[in-house]
Length: 65
Image (cartoon, rainbow, N blue to C red; front, side, top):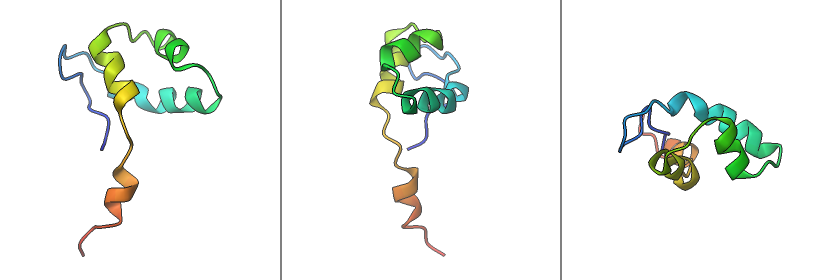
């Protein structure tokens, strides 16, 4: 739901890069180039960014009061 602060496999901090990644993708840049520019080189970290689906807005609809 929310991008993890650190990579699950290697422990590299990556959470702070998520917003910049989304902004660059909206400018219709290629995901490979964006990940390279953010210096995300490891496969484990790249898979977190490429496989992440932002579901927080959908989950927030079901909040209990």
